[in-house]
Image (cartoon, rainbow, N blue to C red):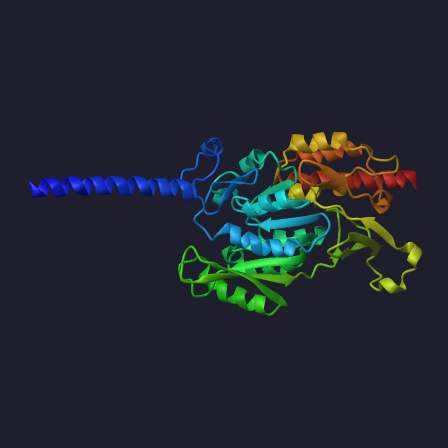
Length: 391
């Protein structure tokens, strides 16, 4: 009799405890809109928190996102103008989506689709309140980061727990290229004591690399792989000062000096053969507006997945530009669902193709970097022909 009573009480306690644990898990990890959560169709708990329209839908198992975002926010709050942000290894896009919601910005995410817990392109579409996010869907290499640093500038670059994932022979080149991508570089890395994290052979070298540069520790975050240890997040001053070229086939000697503060952002065009700006007559200096966003060519070369082709074409159709403006692939800036024009007369001085708009559409429709390269080569050749005809 006692055994029966004991067994019954045990089953009751077990049932109550299990019910409470399930309720706790659902409240903690699946808090938010049930309709949005059901549309995600997750097979397992994601690494990073998932947010849709700035509401938490699913909590991830990785380092706490909210506290890390607050550390990043302390840097973003210094800007009093629109900004461009690059998030390398964006995971589920938590940081980029938060920034896109909170600040006048264009947030460019780079994510390896084979390592996503959920399609980041799908999340871009579900975040219907945001029109200022961009997705490059690829596992980016150190070489591609280096090429990007020649054509792009970002006000803030996020490299959160990503450097140690690069091959051992490539992580340093990747780190140096990241410093050349913009002004405020935020790098987060696991501690050497965390023996359960991947990329063990890189972590000590990454820590030494960071310490060799002017850095500020802005956050410590408990590691999900080793709760007794803390990852560190650093703010490093970037080394980006010049845009070397805008096009894949820019044979001119024109470069653009970058002038960015927390209040202003503009470019000054100059001859690359004259490195002393003070020696150039003031009237020859050409100050250019530097819109936020990423160039169409970079977007296509790095497998831009969002905005979609049709979205970009619709944005181009809405653009009204003055009679003297140029519409070429190299001066179209992707800002999310909208575009802007980088209007520089020297682009047209290098020659304009016979049908520039068709070349733009050909670049948009190109399915890989090789096809983008071929279209741009044909356009450069056509520009040279048209320039010869008109000269």
